[in-house]
Length: 104
Image (cartoon, rainbow, N blue to C red):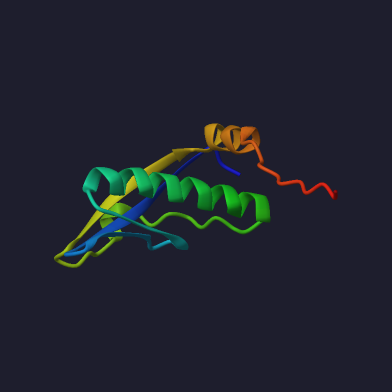
């Protein structure tokens, strides 16, 4: 387990929005309407995916370097970094909502 991870996200600009994917982590996908929102969503999905992988004991791959990523004309590659001690702390502090049914 590392404290800091940086992975390349690919933002694909389509007429209906921006699709976000991480070439090294297949399950980390999201979408957005604006570039600002896409960067926020990319960070969030990366945090959640890496936290889940750590909890499940799933290997976290080595990140491909930005210069080794090839994009199409309507795509842009960006580095997304996450500081895992903060993410882990936030996940531990999340409250859990439970519904309780009491028989009459």
